[in-house]
Structures are given as C-alpha cells and as structure tokens.
Length: 377
Image (cartoon, rainbow, N blue to C red; front, top):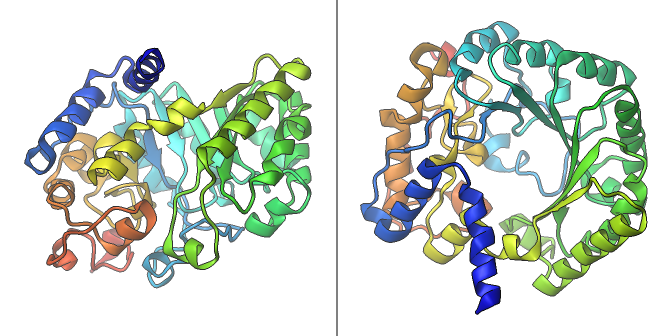
C-alpha cells in the first residue's frame, strides 16, 4: 500500500503548480463524453507553446510518421514557416514561459533558425529546440550559443555505433562530438531523448559512457515506443517493464560510477507506469493532447495536436491564441474525440479506439490535404 501511495504522489507531480491541467484531467476522467471540449489551460499555466517552424527533415527515422499517407500524400512536407510569418506569430506568445521549436521537421534545417530563437526571446524567457543533432556543426552551434537558446533536446536511439544509423540514418558519435563542442562554448542545457523499443533496447545501455564528456548534459529521457501498425508489421514492439527497469537501473549505476551527479533520468518506472496522457488514453480511451497545450503548424495555424499538425484550425496571427485554442474548430475536434470518434491517424499512432459511423471530413481542416490555408484561394 505504501508503494501505491508513493506511485500516486509521483503521478500528482505532473500537475504541480497547474490547477488548470489537473481540473481538466479530473473532469475528463470522471465525465468522459459528458466533459466539456473547452480547455481550461491558460498560457501562464501551460508548460509551453509548441511551434513547428519547418516540415523539412534530413533524416528518415523508422519510428517517425512523416512517411505515412497522412503526411506523405499531402502538400504539407518540405516547407518552412516564412520568417516574416514567425515574426507576426511570436507576439501572441506573451504569457507563456517557454516556446518549443519542434514538430515533424528538423528545426535546424530552417534557413533562419538562430534568428528565430532571438526573435522568440523577445517574448518569452525560455526557448527550447528538439533536434536530431546532425546539423549542429560548429557554425550552427556558435550561432545558437549566441542566440539566447535556453534548452536543447537531441534524439539519439542507439549508442553501439550501428543501431542509431540503422533506425535514424545518423551516426551518434558525430552527434556527440557536436554536443561536446556546444558544451565547451555555452551553458545550454542538453537533454537526450531515446525511443525505447525491443529493436534498439540493447544498444541503449552504452548511453551514459558515450555521453560522459558532454558537460551540459542534464537529462536522459527514455520514451517508450508509440506503437503503430507499420512497426508491428516490422516486428518492432515495446519492451517489458522489467527490461525498462534494468535499463534505468544501469543508467543510475553508471552515472554514479562516473560521478556525473548533475544528470537526471526521466521517467523512472513509476512515472512511466502512470503517465497522465498514456494512462488516460489506454485505460479510458480519452486523448488529452488536444486539451494540454497549443501546437502551431508551419502555416501559423493552431493544430489539433502534435501528431495532427497538417490540419489547420484557425490562424493564430489573425485571431490570437485564446480565440484559436478554444475556437469553434478545435472545440469540434475535441468534442468529436470525447464522443469516441478518432480518425485513422489517432487510431494508428496513439492506439485509441474509434466508435465508428462518423464522417471525419466534417472536421475543420481534415480534408485540406495539408495545403496552406493562408493561400487557399
């Protein structure tokens, strides 16, 4: 019983200093389809504003959904947000603590990525980039070090010299060299994100030893695999809880042995077992992503969630965050999902169940095939 109480205490940490988040979560948990489609989360209480500044990527990772029909068969890919559009968008980020430059594309392919960070810093205290790290060459590293960037998340899915190349198309040793150099010229905190699957499990055990000279490394983030139909077809699956525990215990042992006291590991097994979003989805068939925090796509439009960024649900530039975050378009998406109707993308990528008998073409932005709504005429 004590262990269960400790587990719940860790679960509640996800809602620290955010009553809005907790209130909405409890409402959905208790009321299900009778819950409101309105999101209570206010900018000052949300973790961050997510912005996709490009849909171009220089890699083709096995787990990524950019080569799936919902993206590949649209006109959304291989574009970047014009810098002038970004400049019009960013004033609407006032009130947020952090901007996260992320999405289906690789942010470092953007032609003005360092200028984008500088511009964002005019409105928020923190700017974070998620990158595959391959383009973090000296020039990019030096520009980002001077830009005011306050956080860097780097995706590496293998540390044995072969696996990262097999599943991501990049060599981790070169990426780690980039990170070591960035650590020499800046104090930008670095987090390593690693997908955890049975296909790359063994290769992750070398992470701490390979990263030991990255002075700015602050966190190792292990991400349990999001199952998709195509991964099942490739016989790629998730690891067991015991395997995850063995990996995390190994990380802790190696961190202690090497005296790397400033490196955090997330999540621990308890946090992974009761992740708020995964638990709500797997146990109650409710997706919390559209209620959590805004995601703005390359067109400057609000999107239903990070995995549906090609669907545009209102211009933030023209209408602002509040009017789009709780606008009629996104409310329609949320209410449809709360009624148990999930499109093929949701079913495939987030493993939610669809009740059927719903025409998803009725959803705002669904039938646009990723075209730019700003030039739809």
